[in-house]
Amino acid sequence: MNIKDVAARSGLPAKTIRYYEEIGLIRPLRGANGYRAFRDSDLHKLAFLARARGLGFTIEECRKLLALYEDRDRASADVKALAEAHLDEMERKIAELRAMQATLRALVESCAGDARPDCPILTGLAGPPCC
Amino acid sequence: MNIKDVAARSGLPAKTIRYYEEIGLIRPLRGANGYRAFRDSDLHKLAFLARARGLGFTIEECRKLLALYEDRDRASADVKALAEAHLDEMERKIAELRAMQATLRALVESCAGDARPDCPILTGLAGPPCC
DNA sequence: GTTGACCTTCCCATTACGGGAAGGATTATG
DNA sequence: CATAATCCTTCCCGTAATGGGAAGGTCAAC
Image (cartoon, rainbow over all chains, first blue to last red; front, side, top):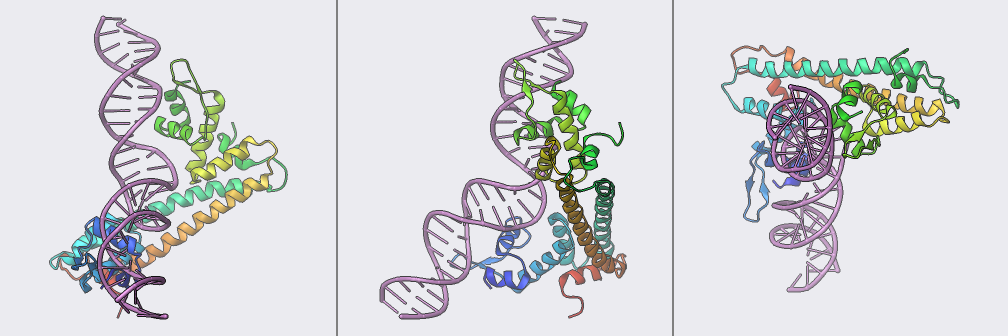
């Protein structure tokens, strides 16, 4: 398979696939013409990576997941630990976003949003709530 | 004021302050020795930027907010629109994180997490749920 | 006068790619 | 069989918002 085929089948852009090779996530063969020659195993890995990335795992986490995937003697506990760490990280990000949202929402709600210049959002950003 | 002072008072690292100057968010004066000489107005802007960044606004959004802040004839509606767009963006990100979380959480919950190699997380990543 | 704490600029690294150029290979069409 | 379209390759630059650290000038204190 050439790169366009695996791109279509994995859902990843060709650019991304080349990048994944560059950083050692996959090692496709090479044809006599210099073209990458992808095996089914490469495609499987790419599809795996596409899903893992889609769940928000970083590239380095994906690398570990792939290593575990390829290691038939892994302990599922290792996988679970990685996944739970990622769940925690997402939880943290959500909490952070919610906190920012809450603060901004309060400012937005106190803003008239009309043609006048008075704006509690700007004064809120300019200084501590009421000094 | 020198950079260390405004850094301490604004809560921003000196590096960040230099960067903000480089991209034109602030324009501190310069002393004869080449040191940046920050006025109170610079400090106010930096504090404003620190709060806006803390609420998740991008640098370009901060630039617009700062312009509105400095424009005494702005309409509060313009500020509110910017803030609401940002609220929407945060909402979108939260939804995305929650969706990823839900998927991953389902996989994690079906994983024994013991010394055995069988792992639904990995098989889930390897292929569509049940084909 | 010499530390030590500042300040400056400059360059490289980060994350995970995307755009696009320059040029070779393959395939399709006339 | 020539040529055009489509592929492929590598290479280099750009993103967002800094952080790290080097090389070197300045300033305050002792």
